[in-house]
Image (cartoon, rainbow over all chains, first blue to last red; front, side, top):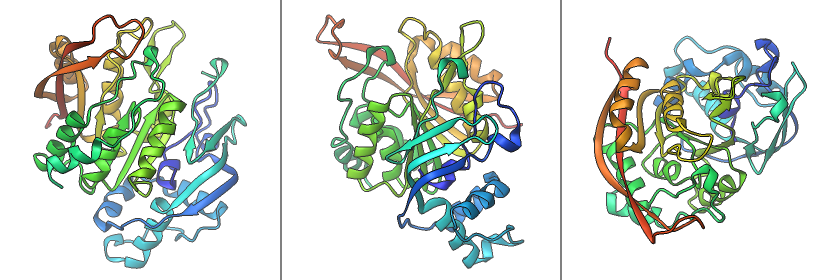
Length: 124
Length: 223
């Protein structure tokens, strides 16, 4: 799973409703792998508004990945920014580990790059 | 990539090792998957450079086809760990690990009254995050999952801002066209097909059975 997907995952345990705590999910004991991918600037610029920037910023800091604090005014003209964004969201793979919810403590496991978002019956 | 080429490649996608009848696990053929994705890109431009989601991805054939037709990012979601394991092996085999992510989750959840609805809790942050959705959803023929085909389509409409390509029994066509309208979508039938479902499960009596299926394309109504 890459960070572009992590940016779309939130805790959905019953009664876990604080939006500030249930997203983004906090990584625990993770194994990262960086895999090159072809960059498509037009795609990145189009995806930008759909990304939760504060969440991405928080997560990349936790993982020690370089990313600007804020989105520049003209991202489409900023090659450096686009490369940093590309590497962060499309080339950073989380292979093993888990994701914790700061709200309810639920742990979502990641195995061979696939996060398990299934919940037990009492959590739905 | 030519259609025949794509179909040839997709023939190498491994299918379910131990298909589970309750989940209606039937592999989408290379023939069909190639035609859906080829049309989606060459006629409508819905794949190349786009973010694509495959709901109920199974062994990943649609997701892989999307990757081969130039999608910039693909997410495949499925409830079954076994299917996802096969899907990941397929993705690695095709060298598409740099493009396709997989997630294990349930598109539907049971609410307090015991009926199924879209799992909004899981999907909320994915709303409108994708350009295109492609799916071959369960038809809802198993006890307890009646209407699951409609819910998958509804989920796809929540997630994709551009177009949705989905397969549904022809017998549900009129109902789905009306439902799509209530969600703000137009629905066109791109093709009428015969699903040749081969004998896969112990309860299957015939060698194979033909089910009439529509390939639907949904897109947002112009306001």
